[in-house]
Image 1: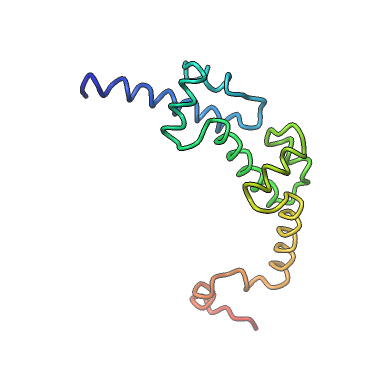
Image 2: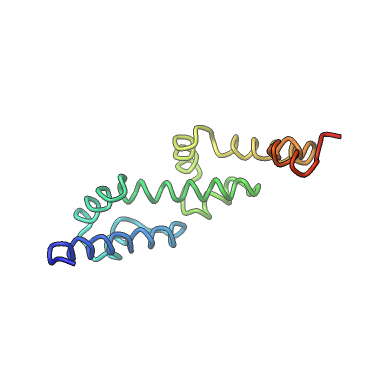
Length: 142
């Protein structure tokens, strides 16, 4: 390891540590000050480094982690309001607009579609099994 390489690795590890902090604490009330403190950087320097490494700001990444976890929770048929607060949003309206921007549909519509999919899965389970897998095990529509 060269002398020039070490500082960059050290900085990278600190940014990764802050990303892990976001991943583990996304549902808490965290902001850029908390996250940059975790990496021991000033917030402006941290935002530049984080964006350079991950291609999005820490706030954008936090929002995407929250939306991804909201999708997983909505797929288990949890109510929208419960999901909103469980993933760390403070208002349902903010959650709804960010969810729609990221996913393309409102959380309520997503939940309704998921419930319809679950009903269809119960009615016709073979439609949700890949055909090659069904043929391999001798399953058919009968």
